[in-house]
Image 1 (tube, rainbow, N blue to C red):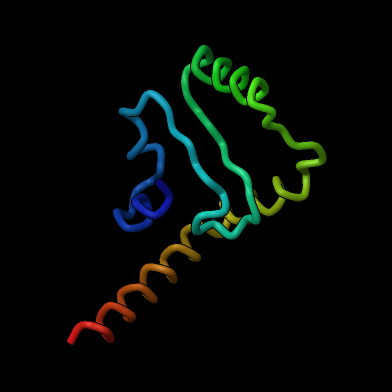
Image 2 (cartoon, rainbow, N blue to C red; image 1 turned 180 degrees about the horizontal axis):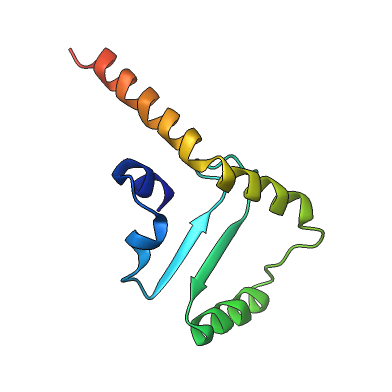
Length: 96
């Protein structure tokens, strides 16, 4: 979602506006060590929460991870734009 938003020059909400639910991994491109967020209708998120607990998912003392995720989101556009530029340069250098 974040990569697509940066590539298109739009806000993530514009891309996700027609979706029933959205998940965002904070470690893929955003630099956090782990973590994700799930957004959707209340019933959907409640069921996901229940299933997560049923399967043993959970985390204690997640503040440090939340801080890393927040920083990643604050710097997402700059970081991902740099990643896109690096990927473009790499592709240009390897195509022959």
